[in-house]
Figure 1 (cartoon, rainbow, N blue to C red):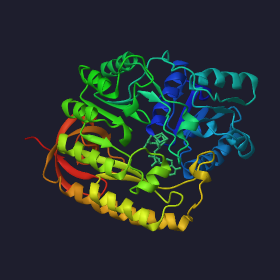
Figure 2 (figure 1 turned 90 degrees about the vertical axis):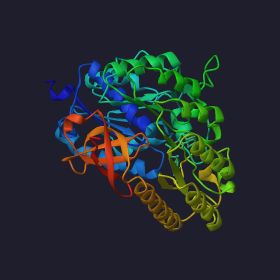
Figure 3 (figure 1 turned 120 degrees about the vertical axis):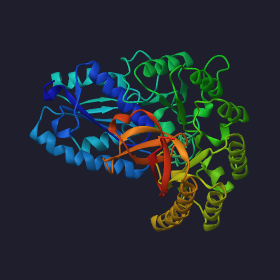
Figure 4 (figure 1 turned 30 degrees about the horizontal axis):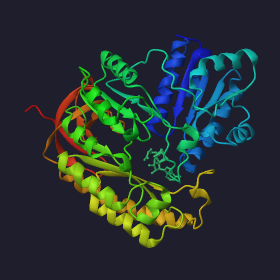
Length: 444
Ligand code: SAM
Ligand code: SF4
């Protein structure tokens, strides 16, 4: 066992990109002789991998830093690092230095590979460091061997985003879109499968624009076709799909490939064309509804999930009613719903017509009530079916049960042996709730 100095704990906020970055930081630290610990009080290095997509995410980080200060007072050798999207924003480094002067390292989203060296340097020099590069530079591939963590893995296919939706901070903190080369992606997936992975989730802010910056004519559809050929792999997922770039060719490819799961996360954001235009999303509600119809026509049983923002600047009650109408028409299986949060430096933060919090809150409540009713009805319609579930492990809320996901990404809870973790089992669905289904292993 390594001494406390050579142990680390990473606390991750935000999206799957951050989860993947955190795994990469863990691999880098482990390759340098550090060991992960479950409890931050036992760690020699604590890293907060931050998100800044909404104000709430940032507030959580400041709250956590307040708690960690006590650990630092008790153990001055503790190294505290703040990494990820938050530190990439102008002015945040200064704010953290003022509010939490005990933080030793600020690490930008393009500097992750420097982590082990910087931690050593802080320990030797006894002074804080800042490593925040603004320019992403080329994609780095020569990282330490990737460790699989169970039967599922995230695999990044693009970094950054070129879309500049007017509300969104991501392009500013993650840089321009850069695609990884298909052979690097395939090599990584093959190595993961060798370690027992059977499901991969391909990650990008807009997976549908994969390959545009690469030579040759590689597209997301052609990448999926190559990944589908990896022997031993059973399931392929991907997030996030942008409705503007979801081509008919891609719909056809997905319907043809047996390993690609019948689930698309397709953020619509709003139901009013006026608001979609102000958001700079590049599609209309009519285009979105046609795409949904085409997906349902070509991929029977497909589940659709989405992201929705309420209270975008200038959103009227009529605009909001169009969002409710679109949600009622599409009948999403599930939706992530957000109150608009102004992000400094984005176009929307400077638009007139910023709405009071009470209006956003009230609209969010109405939207969630509608979606919850739809989610429950969708799940109820599945009761009685036998579905394939990839077991993720004991359920977090009831460890005597197992939890796992269907190909359509539904969460299923059922009694079973923990030894089934990482395996595909057939489960008969017996009971529906808004967020999950209950079931029992089917021996039939
Ligand atoms: N690239 C993905 C996409 O285009 O949908 C997801 C990016 S973002 C990390 C995830 C979700 O956060 C978005 O789909 C959007 O609904 C929400 N979001 C982004 N910026 C926001 C803001 N300023 N206020 C509220 N929600 C926001
Ligand atoms: Fe943000 Fe839009 Fe890019 Fe998604 S597509 S990351 S919402 S700018």
